[in-house]
Length: 173
Image (cartoon, rainbow, N blue to C red; front, side):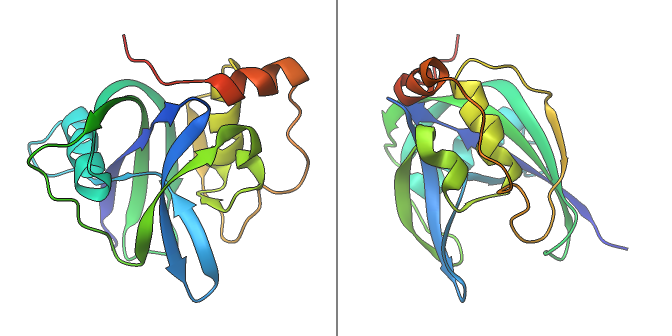
């Protein structure tokens, strides 16, 4: 029987750009949200704060839980990602960033064109873009699928919503 692992992930947006980890495997470059596994006794907000600092060298202030998505395939465990909106605070002090397996670096991706970026799980592309455009979505996004099933139809946002997404900055109150 496979274990279940909770993972705290961060949506950090500054001036319409999303913080992401750039990874490379045999199929090429792709992106994931910063964050990772929760330690025993650690709150989810503390986990996302720690993981973002370790992976990117950036301090964040975790806020609202935006999304929950499951990853039952592709790893030795069933992953449940809890995705929090996080406000950018600044460069971490006293934390030496270290890259995860296959991590090449950190990038800020344009939210307005996120739907066509190789960000995984792919269900997050539309969810994050719509969030930044001011649309509300269901929190539970379901189970991710193998491959890239979310690139089927264009994202239907008005020009005003795209402009709003392009200017969005995460602020935690």
